[in-house]
Image 1 (cartoon, helix red, strand yellow):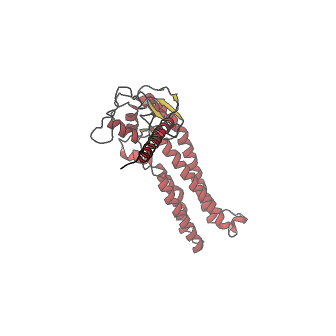
Image 2 (cartoon, helix red, strand yellow):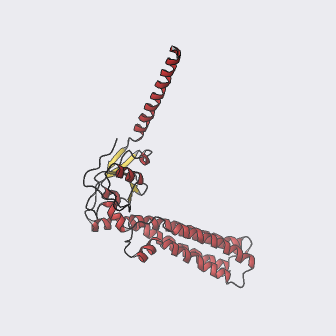
Image 3 (cartoon, rainbow, N blue to C red):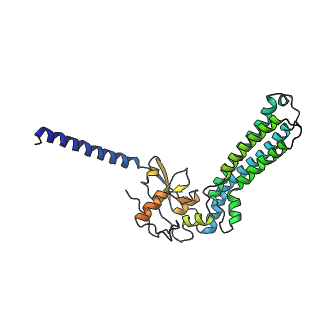
Length: 287
């Protein structure tokens, strides 16, 4: 039979457990308090939106092209150093001979890699249309083509150089092969965005725009709900329409918000193909 002491202990334990739960809920609630800045929608309609996204992507495209040109220039230097066309005393001495073209080929790789990342960033800000599949693939994987151009000629020149010794050829080929594989992997856009998807996210194609969505300065997604778990660690949020979010480089909805929206009836799935039908009613954040 339970004693009064046992009952008091059980009540104390229950009280502590309840307090812990309440403290956890309070902490979670406090965690989602944000400083929200409203962002006005800049455009009306497809033409204006595409003009803004193209403008946003332009600096990244220019920077990528410049880096890719530098990459090819470093490749040329690497070839000239390897073939000893450039007469530099330090470079002709071991290990200086190896260091000269190795440094050039590594700089080649860095330029290709950073250029590919910038190009992919530009493609997500201003995506190509998926109607022409060949053009769409080339547009999204131009980094792959550049990677091949930036390393394949070096490998060919190395293997066909009759004056170079076997050890030099082996070292150069292995290094270049590793770098070209890495550059190709970086150049592939594993999650490309199409112009059609971007316009759908903005509400252009459906004619309906979410009135209140949230996003951060970084990242690629926008959120339907202010209390989305992915926003817990972000003190400052931007808020506006889904079209304003797309104007600011957020080309898709957060997957968790999408799933929650479907569950709560805010999003209606069509044919299970991950399309989003945006409602005309305002989305109210769930506290």
